[in-house]
Image 1 (cartoon, rainbow, N blue to C red):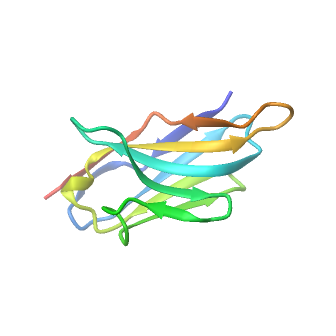
Image 2 (cartoon, rainbow, N blue to C red; image 1 turned 90 degrees about the vertical axis):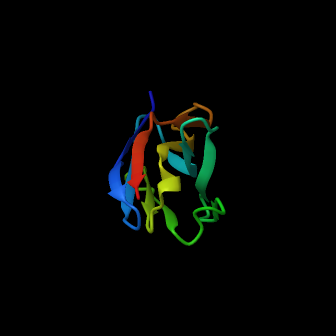
Length: 121
């Protein structure tokens, strides 16, 4: 009943920028936590950035100062602004939302299917 769809990935040269979006639909009352994760070939999935309902943020050391996470609670959408991209940022980026739901449905966490980001040197 809940679906997350990432968009905004693509091919960009080193030093360039991309803005990823995560659009949610379904039985969602509000976002508790929004997270962006990435997985590069041959590596495990890692946390990139997280923002809570109080707008507290956490970033991986490798992206601090370059990436900015944000959320739009009206449209239940998450964003990841990525600046000064490096080839090391190449990965599939995934959106995750921990949400409160309407009615008696308990809180739950959902994942998108990912969007590819490729940074060329």
